[in-house]
Image 1: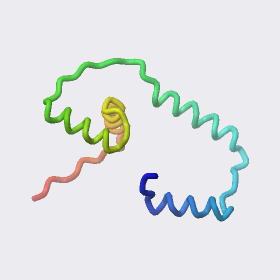
Image 2: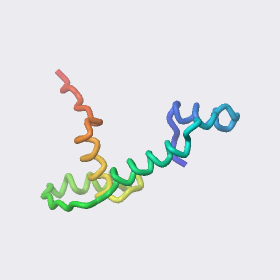
Image 3: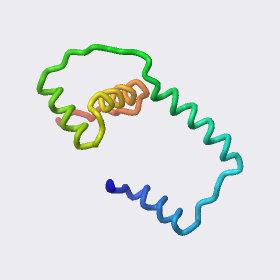
Image 4: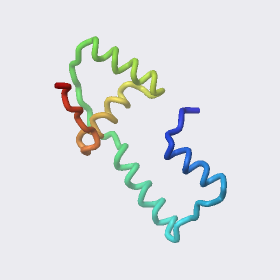
Length: 93
């Protein structure tokens, strides 16, 4: 099992202790989340991209470490970038 973050541990402990309650409109919420997930992961376009072999090897190694195919990793990173979820680190000065 992967290492859990403190927030995930807290949720797991609450679940195991029976402190989590189902929301009133759970079925609607689940349905909405399924639609969003399906739209998010729908792969309906192809691209070709040229990378340095060094970058490709690094991507493949990182994907292997994460336990996912490297193309899935690339797709995920691009999705997070266009969705504004990736934050660029400030350069050390």
